Length: 262
Image 1 (cartoon, rainbow, N blue to C red):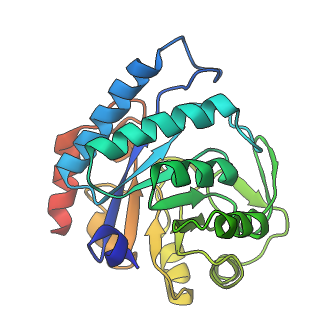
Image 2 (cartoon, rainbow, N blue to C red):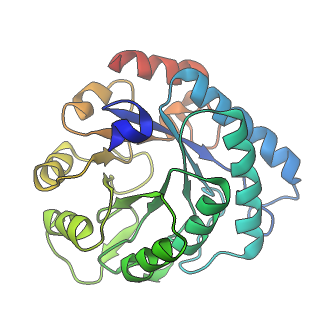
Image 3 (cartoon, rainbow, N blue to C red):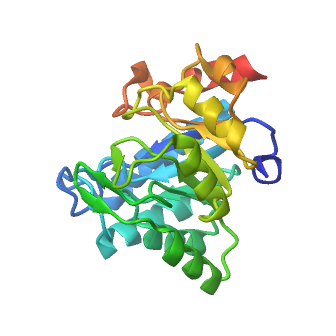
């Protein structure tokens, strides 16, 4: 599946962390043009540095809603994603935090995105901002109704969540694949920037028949070790200037990591 989407067997997906969007608590009045300038340059740097895909996310809209985001967020993300898709040729994905899968599908439909990321596909859970129900039953029906060919990348017991009904990680992986119909699984650490334990990646990989990605804590120093197990990686903080999440993407850091796997 990865080769058909990304053109490689082992895919590196870089993050475009959007600045705070209008209406978000941390928004300070920046215009959509100013936000677009930042996001466009990050996307161009990721693509030029050799990333195989780009995931667009409203990372700076915290604290995140556990239900639907405002229509203004959907509108802004759609406009931004359209421009990013215009200027880069790599596949793009959509992630609307925290688990607004309806918005993700709507944006993906509008911009012809190739994949979405869903934090809670199966296994309803608690987050620091409240309860999040499993998305699979309604999400899959809406994807079918929209006749939408978009791949579904699902977190497995992801960061910042705790299962309402605890069970083994490998059981969550099996359920996401067989009952949630995920196209790929994501294994993370406990929070942003914290490495996904190799033993957890291996546990999921041994159970799954679909691609498995490492979703946090990936660096140039550990990418080879991770790729001995995982089929791909989603990388945010490490690609930023000085490795800090709030900074812009540093093309040299992207190129350095990509050079380790080529």
